[in-house]
Length: 307
Image 1 (cartoon, helix red, strand yellow):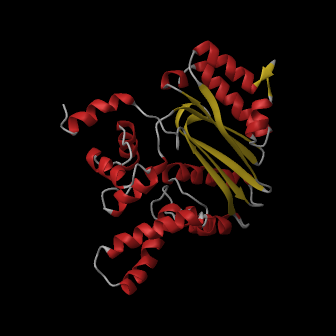
Image 2 (image 1 turned 90 degrees about the vertical axis):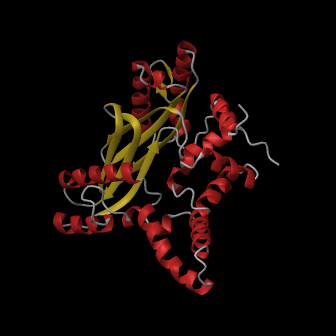
Image 3 (image 1 turned 135 degrees about the vertical axis):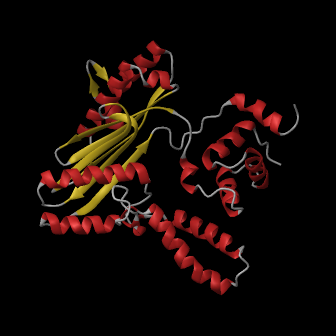
């Protein structure tokens, strides 16, 4: 049997919102496999928060930078939120975003780029030595479109163009940029709130779709209905899944009723030129980073009745 640690239980609970003992049971049943444990909880109806699976605790900031038809995002991590609020750290993240825009979002080129009299990597190394806390430029990306606009949105902003969530949205169109930009910013706000996984169904990774199909089918079979009936049910279940996770199928958070694809169709008519979402990117600080906290062991021991 796998050694299920207190940190693993807490990590699963943070990702799914399920109870501590349910998380412990799930990990025991799946030999400590985190992803399999998430699926086990969902199949049991204990956890339905699939989107939380990538959430994890980490600190830092996302920086954004935009220019003519282009934009860039950078995530810089630190060990504590105290450092993330430091003015020197914030200044570094903003300058890193500006450089990432010039370097087309290439992380390697960003780290090697000039930053004052040093490189970005050297400046970061000096900050680590000065502040005494580990830091890293975790990732960077850029979007560009021609013709069209790239808009940025920052949620939970620590200061202009810096926050816990950063989004870029590229709209391709020959329409007036003054009309395109407000729409692009609203869609960026939507992406921040709705966290879509892909632009279209075709952009969804096959393994992600297959995994969700398996989970939904298992849940449907628990109703006791025949296999043939369940297969028909799966059409509606997967349609609902895509409505939740595919940007063009999602309901626009700005008005709460219009599908994003319809918003784009209307814009094309109103602006007098075809409009399409050419791409989007969403960075959230710490997503996918595991951070084990040892002080959770006491709670586990108490719940297990050993103290």
